[in-house]
Image (cartoon, rainbow, N blue to C red; front, side):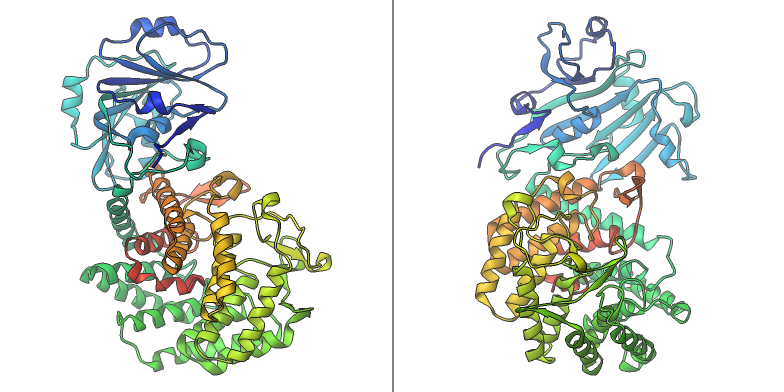
Length: 615
């Protein structure tokens, strides 16, 4: 396997960064008009090697044998992110990030809401094997006015006394240079499974400025990192602020599903008790719930209860479902009469609950309605859907709301032996719709666009529409639905076509272009790891395993934002305002991340993803 590469600002910095070294490395971030001569004159003798970041073009850097790398500022690199990027590939006895900029916004501010915070020293566990020590060097005890800080990442929990006694000679520079100081560094063996392709910071995480840490993760570290991160998420979800919603995707049913997966894996009796407590709580709010959908209402809750019963986690009989059945059947009929089939919010979303219940009569109501309202053109079959952003009807290609989701529902009906002839006819009609609209991949890096307005539609192989790369929209979700249908129908030719397309898209790793902004299941990295894991399990092809591992590592990396979230994960709440925040939900928050991580650690418990239309 070829050695990994590290590319920064189009410079190959692999050799200077990964050379064998042991000693003290200082990473200095050049600031405008900094006096480098004075800077180098003041360097203490403990500094043995120097990396200088963000130098402007044409800057005359003083001659110094200790300089191993000087990077220009064609793209600003945060020194802390830079450090973490190489941190996983070196052995560090201790290190510290010293920021002496007088305008520094102290990180303590993120923890002010915690009543037990010691504003001089703050510990926060990272991955249960490391500790992050915050130690304020300023004279003022008020953290908001602190102007100097040490952040230490250590494996041996070096304490405050050690820092004071051993490192009192640490140099500071009047607020103009950011310093990252590492002591006792030596190279790990980098030839073990890391990545076989060139890697750049931008490729790993293009918006690293929103997060504290980016880095490379060795393969052998992944299982322990998953276990530690899942434990942290489970602890947080156990004490979360409830949403008072029974919804599976967006409400309190989502965390219960995660507890169930965790219990199936660990048999932890305290988690089983937590599951029952959470269900008891949801039962108290069901009568006040008007939402009916799989996403945010009664249908998703009902599906969860069926899942828990099937897994013998809870014991309920059919009478438990009778009130749900009565309400949801009435709503289902209304959606069918209006030809509203959305699989998250409308007719199919409720039918997914009845399908899980084995309620054939109710499922057939939707099948009949789909058949009645289908549109045919040549051999293709499709349905219209209202597109709110455009205020117009469209043909939707996505899994979350479009034809791929309808395909999944029909496949589940076929699998259950319900109206198989009709289901097969509709499935192949949908397949023809996609075949008539496949795009030239070399032009757009997308096989299928997100949607086409009805008034502008005509079958075209030359369409060049764009979309994201995710579960909700984009090729991974769409192709997953196609493969599930082809596999259920035992259509080897169709399966081979999908495998070829999936092999094509695995090279997509430009996260900025793919619109992979966070780790959520809906449109983030965790679902990509899960979907490619599924493809590996079905096909045994190593390329899918490697791709799944790549997105799994990205997901773990995104969970290192310790200072902004108790779990390390923050999510893009509003793309228009660039608002980020914490989210506990299954669809767009840490519950979905946890479910994906649990599946990655044990393929035995992957069938929960039926809830996400992936099985």
